[in-house]
Length: 100
Image 1: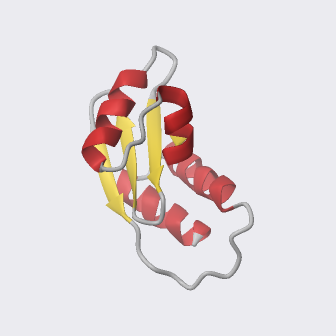
Image 2: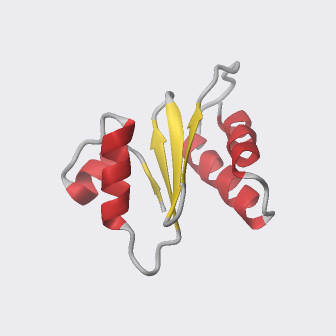
């Protein structure tokens, strides 16, 4: 599951403006069928949660060429990294390069 501020607000009626609030919201929506949650906090950072860990990855600036389907590209990069058992930090770096 991937979330951003808008989806999180619709799902939980809480706007996660900071990391602490995002973590509390994510912990509250874990279900048996959800194994991972990636919370996209705009251009500032991404948060990746499993039931046992949380990873914060700060975004970095790259030359933007085209932002069409950026959300889809983000998700593809993350899922590809998970399928290939890449280290989480590398997954985020790879997908951020794809998106920005």
